[in-house]
Amino acid sequence: MALRFEILGRFNRARAARLTLPHFVCETPLFMPVGTQGTIKGLTTNQLEDIGCQIILGNTYHLALRPTSELIDELGGLHKFMNWPRALLTDSGGFQMVSLLHLADITEEGVTFQSPVDGKPMLLTPEESIQIQNRIGADIIMALDDVVKTTITGPRIEEAMYRTLRWIDRCIAAHKRPKEQNLFGIVQGGLDPVLRDICVQGLVERNLPGYAIGGLAGGEDKDSFWRVVAQCTASLPESKPRYVMGVGYPLDIVVCSALGADMYDCVYPTRTARFGTALVPEGVLRLKHQSMADDTRPIDSTCECMVCKNYTRAYLHCLVTKDAMGSQLLSYHNLYYMMQLSRNLHSSIIEGTFPKFVCDFLTKMFPEGNVPEWVCNAMEVAGIDISSCCTPLNTKLNIHASSG
Image (cartoon, rainbow, N blue to C red; front, side):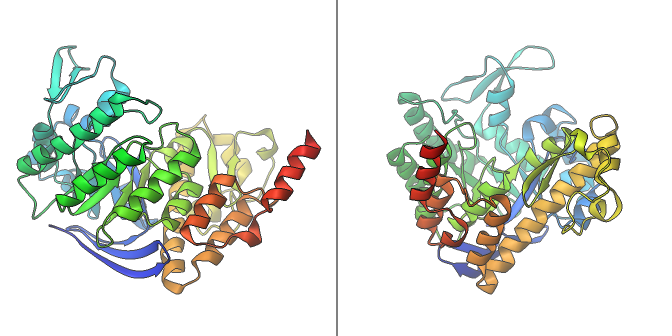
């Protein structure tokens, strides 16, 4: 095992920890930006260090196509190739196959898909996914799992879960660098609590360095989403990191952290920046909106980032979607916001002020007290009292009745 995970503070289910990886000592909860081709679009690695980014996620599928894992290996690994001294995590490549490619066919052997280069059929097996990731050299590597959209039901979900467990053994056997790279398993099982439980138990028996909760953030309703996270975090080992894949909305990260998750990744903060949207404590700010044209305030007056210190909304309104600089500046701000959120989660859990942090966060986002019911339910299970920032449920029902 090439990691150490030390819990520094707790509040009920929430934990703040120190995660020591081969290339960096990280503090959790943490958010990982997605750098598809070994780059976070529009930002330099120095800028990512400046804003406090700890781990970058690289997409195995894209890197294997270009520049190829062999070349990355030859040039000394992805850290050296992209000049990133801190930690890296690579996904298995399976998700891209299923989401990007038509005619990806999953069998017991692996994922068969058409090569985007020459259209020939190609096969990605658990063994090959691990070999590619061993060459790329990230601190954390992900097992190849059988990916199914959460919105699908029936026997396919069960088949995928059991196949994921069979494939984890093939991944473990193929993993040649366990002292330098940490292989995480992925909990599957759709929205079925029984299947999720079987998968958690199976993975925990394999005693892996860390565990991911997969198959979420794909269109399921929020009530199902938080319940799966709550169930998995309750059964996974206390002493290992827990990673909820594909989660990037600030509200979701606060809820999942309250439920005991530690790590998150998503394209959302940078993708939404390219569409001219900034993350702010109130939710989002759409800089393309005409009302921004003569607004001389920063994106967020409480934000300490370089963009908020130097540029007005009016200036950014001019740039967004017209000039590359606009999406670069917004990406910088949005990732700074996510890193600050991670730091605040970490410090509030350690200082014992986590419920106050959650309440302040919710009050800014829902000043009318109309906190979504799923958030209220999740916080109740997490043992966080948010009554001071929530409109009581019966009042909500009256509001709906009177507005009908």
